[in-house]
Length: 226
Ligand SMILES: [Fe+2]
Ligand SMILES: [Fe+2]
Image (tube, rainbow, N blue to C red):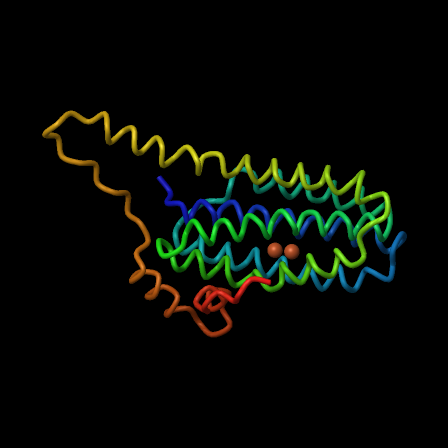
C-alpha cells in the first residue's frame, strides 16, 4: 500500500494534468474571446507543465503508477477550459482564481500532514507553491462581476469534489491499517510497516538528481507560502 506522501503526489500529478488542460482549453477559446490574456495563459500553462513533471519524476522514482483520475482530470479540465474560455476574460480569471484557491488550501494541508514524515514529497509540493500563489493572485485581480457569484462557487465545488475523490482512500487507509493491527490475536508477530520513504532515502534520491532535472526542485527547501 502506498504511503501518504506517494498518494498526495499521485493526486497532485493528476491535478496538474487537469490544470494544464484547463489552460489549454482557455487558450483555445481566448484567441477569440480574450486575446489579451493568451500570453499570460500560455506562460502559466508552462508553469503547470513544470509542476506536472515535478510530480511525475518523483512518482517514477517511487514506481507509483498514474492516478486513476488522471485522464478524468484531463478531460474535465479541457471541458472546463473550453466553456469558461468561451465566456470571456472575467470568466477565465474567475475560474482559474477559484481553482487555485482550492488547490493552495489543499497544498498547505498536505504540507502540514506530511511535516517530517516524507521530506521528498514535502519538497516537491513546496517547490510549486510560489507559482501557484502567483497564479491565484494575478487571476484574482481580474476576476469578479457576476461570475464571482454564479461561476466561482460552482468551480470551487467541482474542484473540491475531484480532489476529495482522489483523497478519499487517503483518509480510509490509516484507519483500515489500524483496525487490521488491532484484530491480530495476542502473541502474533506485529504487521511489518510497509516500506516507507525514510528521510535518509529521500536525501539520497534528491542528492542524486541531475542538474536541470525537475527533481532538483524537490531537493530545494520549500519556499515560504504566500
Ligand atoms: Fe500547478
Ligand atoms: Fe496553478
